[in-house]
Image 1 (cartoon, helix red, strand yellow):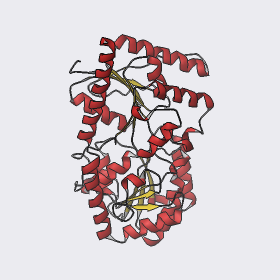
Image 2: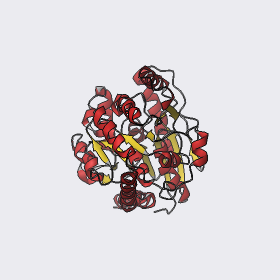
Image 3: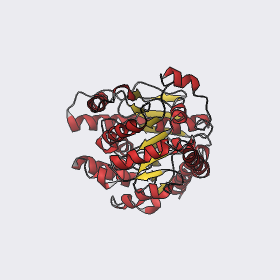
Image 4: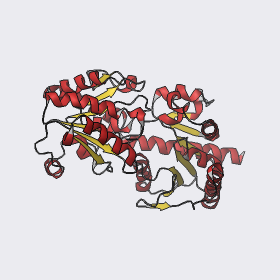
Amino acid sequence: MRNRLRILHIGNGRAFKIKAIVDAFVQRGHEIHMLPVPPSDDGWDGVAWHRLSPSPLPGRARVLALMLQARRLAQRLQPDIVHAHNAWGPGWYGAFAGCHPFVIHAYGGDLLPEQYEGRPALQRRLTSWACRSADRIVVTGRHMIEASARLGIRRERLTLLPRGVDLQRYRPGLDISAFRLRLGLDAAKPVILSPRYQVDEKLYNLEIVIEAFADVLKQFPYAVCLQLYDPARESGRARLQGIAAARGLAGAYRLIPAVDNAAMPLFYNLADVVVSVPSSDGFPVTVLEASACAAPLVVSRLPYCAEWFENGENGLVVPVRDPRALSEAVIALCADVERRRRLGIAGRRQVEARADYARCMDELEAVYRDLLARTTRREDS
């Protein structure tokens, strides 16, 4: 087995969570290739970037033509590992490539029934087929193991592994004075951060965040809520801006383009409270990042919380889509500096113990090498 691996990653070329994994294996000296799905020209340092040629065909035929291109690319590269990030979409391309070992990183929308069942029938069948084709599926939360069984995925092909957080980069105590001034927040107090940037997806309940923030502002007139957003999701940004304007929040509610892993720790250090209150989720990396920066969290009561949160000990847990409970939790934290400090310390300790980036990447590489060893044994027998 080669010590230096040739790995083909397939996934969103603008996703910071994917880049964090790719960067780890670049730093380890492996040969890394990236096939962005959907196509993207961005490129990452140390990574061979491949782009599918646009197809003039309509609808399903266009997807099939692109998948054929992905198959030809994989046949030419002959990677040791094909790793698709998301079973839905990129997983189809990875499965169609026909190379093994084939690994899928599955997230909430891939497996959780409240999200999966809402997809068109053909997409559900493709996702189920991709999962059955994979030699290993990496999931981020225990509740996703149960959801996997509904797709006929055997337990022995699942690996439970947090995405991990770089504890050197994501840490408390960063100097944010210049950053605060650059954002024009010198007089803002407190600062509420809503980091879920998928502003066009209803399940993230960002309108609930706005409704709750309106109540927070009554108690703390100088409060500011920072909502990150993906610039590619302009319609969602405009919708949220309209909701905030209708509530008279003016400059207190600010939409800010999502940033990369270099700048994101500054936002968590800036925040007095971080909120993440979707209706469904796998195991959001934003929760791990905020905890690593000792930022106090308010989260919605979802299955993954049972693995990570003890309410009142390392965060506050509120019912799903309950703006009053959310505002009460945020107000309680804004009013109590010592409680924020205590929750933040507990969160940081838990990330150190359970989600250290280096250890998680060690485990992922061990998955790769175990699969390669099994493939070699089968070929030799």
